[in-house]
Amino acid sequence: MCGIVGYLGPLKAAPVLLNELKCLEYRGYDSAGVAVIENGRLSVMKAAGKLSNLEALLADKKPSANVGIGHTRWATHGIPNDQNAHPHTDSTGTIAVVHNGIIENYEELREELKGLGYAFNSDTDTEVVAHLVSHEYKVDKDLLKAITRSVKRLVGIFALGVVSQEHPDRIYAINHHYSLSVGLGNDENFLASDSMAVRQYTNRVIKLEQSEIAEITAAKVRLFTFDGVEVKRSPIALDTSPYVIDKCGYKHFLLKEIHEQPLVLRQTLSKYLRHPNHPIDLTIDHLTPAGSQSANYGVHLTDEEIKGLTRINIFACGTAYHASMVGKLLIEELVGIPVDVDIASEIRGRRLLCNESTLAIAVSQSGETADTLAALTEAKKKGAYTLGITNRADSHLAQLTQNLIVTECGIEVSVAATKTYLAQLACFYLLAIYLGERRGTLTPERAKELKIKLNLVPAMIEQILARDEVIRETSVKYAEAQDVVFIGRGLNFPTALEGALKLKELSYIHASGYAAGELKHGPIAVLDQNVPVITVLVPGLVYEKTLSNAQEARARKAKMIAVAVDGDEQAQRTFDSVLTIPPVDELFSPMTTVVPLQLLSYFISDYLGKDVDQPRNLAKSVTVE
Ligand code: F6R
Image (tube, rainbow, N blue to C red; front, side):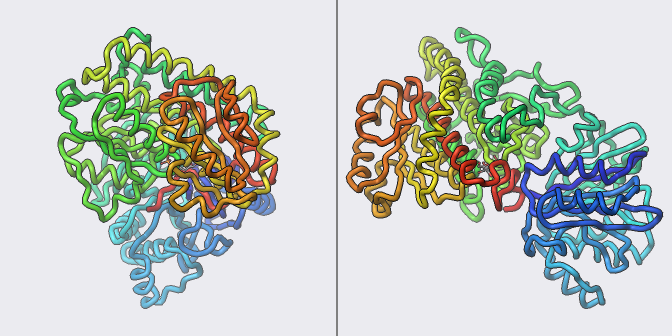
């Protein structure tokens, strides 16, 4: 979603801001802009659409300023156009503001400011901040005090960047339940809502905590609470990672990330699973990156606390929710604790039955998903133990939880989640075995067998990836479909949901995933010869029943596609097309069955000429509720 950047130092600000914004592109946006102060004058340049439009504008104007803020906007209030793009300025054109999040009381403030004679030029909630700061600035000509008074009047969660023509040596950054990092250089400083954006310049950052204001000059960073009290904080070192933001020869980031999955799994598994004969160790304090503030790395529950758990609640959205659905089944199967998994946004306004013997798990690739953070906060208030599973050790989620499992994926650039899904699944396998070992629900022999099988999965995925050409040829046969139905049972019902989500995100084809047994309870009505039905079919407890459900679809003349294991002759006879995977134990199958479905969606999207890495309307980090 929206991204904030800033720079002040000896370099020309515009190219630096642009480089920073490019790192945030993957988060999703629909317009971009910068405000710089040049020769004592504030100048704003912004453009709807891709960053290349802003780049062209900057190439034309050639600002040589050394200070500026920038923004990528994902529209919430007002359509994506030049006018609504950030930065927004006050009526004097001397103060500029960029903003992530939502100002919930903006209408009330807008009316008040209009009453005071301020004229508005956009439909955004952000513009009220520019006028409010301007109004407060008139009181004592103290910008920090004016900002402090202003932000205290804002309701909602937000991050802001502010520059003023009258103070060209500084940028103000404000964080209120959001995320902002200041990157520290030598006589230069950087600002970014995602520390990824400053990593190309420095790996030393100061993260703003909740309700804090940073006053940033080229030489110094000072932090203040909303009550005006100065706070001191040491910088942290950003994690180093073997992954780079580069397509490395692949046509799209998505394809590269799908192909990175064996590596990602090996990294995540090897971090916690030393040897099949040893119990899984989720504490891993020794792996905390140097200088990191994440004292909560790993799972630190005592044996007594683990044995005392009566319930687990998992909160997540989208793809992370699908991984969590698999997690629920694994934990219930291997540990025997009842697990509820909820779409995080559904927790709002509901009576959440958590208590001191509950483990609340929030799963989020970005660690910034507002709904997931809100659900976890609610569980925390009720006294639950908290565990975060995220790909971002520097995220808001990482700060919120007592226990933290960090997936080893590197940055996931493509908006559609693939490798982080696999890594989240891996974490649930590790967690389920870990809890099973600690609670004694798994014998050492069974635990060892599970660990050996888990370690075999990356090689199986490599085999599937080697078949990508066959998957491509099969996929494009179905690329013209208007509606596609995915079905699966048990552990592969979430796979069906994830397959459908990937297809609709990437190709914009309407797709739905169903528990295979549900087909006859309604969805079967949509089936005819124009609707492909994709069945996830793996030998095991639900094989025969899934096959029967597929037959019901076949009887309605649907086009039949299966993900099935090598040598499944029944599948070859029943389906028009079969995407094969190596034979796999049913328990571990969600990690392999999803891979052909990711590739299928990728190839269809590419064939249809869609924007594979940045599908329309989507954002990588969903920071509004
Ligand atoms: C799907 C996708 C989204 C995210 C969802 C949650 O490809 O990327 O559905 O999974 O927005 O995001 P995180 O995991 O960052 O909380």
